[in-house]
Length: 120
Image (cartoon, rainbow, N blue to C red; front, top):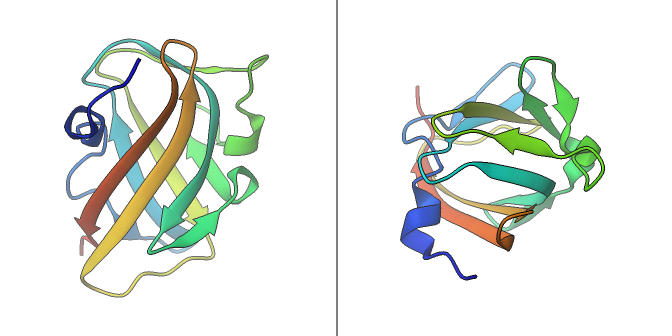
């Protein structure tokens, strides 16, 4: 099943891209359908790829994105929001290209591709 890019872009929370003390953070919110993520990463920021081991999912308990597997999936209910952090990255003001690669149990591989400004 192919999901239109415009629909996938709706997962990215507008205005959530920001610099944090530890790195760069942003949010995804599920406004489409219940989703089971079985793999997350890489995430590309301005053509620089970050492996799942460099990405932290800030849910009820922080965990590396590399811990999301077929055997330990991440369920994302409708309306649920997740925070992500890429440690050690700092972005300059202005627009940045973000590409998020994931695999879901329901539809297989998905790519969320957005252009977003760093919020103040």
